[in-house]
Length: 105
Image (tube, rainbow, N blue to C red; front, top):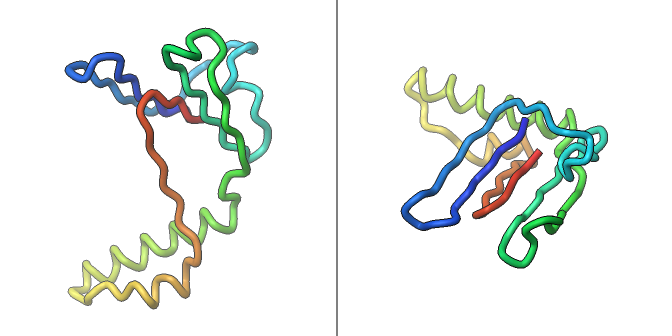
């Protein structure tokens, strides 16, 4: 998946997430395995974007986050209060990120 946030003009912000076919030379196409890559294009980096790359969450952390979400939804559906301490024991890691002008794959 590729997430894009474009904000060249404050009145015209565009965001989208989805599958994309990337050309072989695209900076986001060079990642491997569970790597996450962020390409930041700006006035200073219009042609060759600033790249940030690092390991993704991996299968274990992703599964724990999904389990956490499922437990929260089930608890709320049953009318029980969501207990964050219990959820943290089931899911020790969470991931979040954002940024203006970023493309993430």
